[in-house]
Length: 111
Image (cartoon, rainbow, N blue to C red):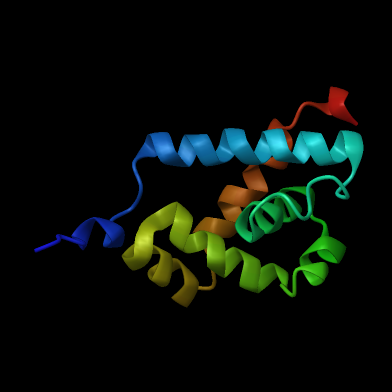
């Protein structure tokens, strides 16, 4: 019997930190070179997460997403099923705050 209870729990802090590092890295790549070389290589989640960091509504629309739908997807990656659903039900304040904190971490030297 498989214990799937871990999917309901929030990811460990290390995983959340890796999301920060990964999305900042991807945002810097897009800022330097544009979307064209990454759009069809990265996963949908990676593209929409990066678009959220960059506040790029046009890219979200290309993916068939809105800011809200993209945040809803990421809420579950960041907080697990139980806490992700609670954040979604509350209007995504925790996920919005998390993404809102990321652009300040992107070094301005990449612009």
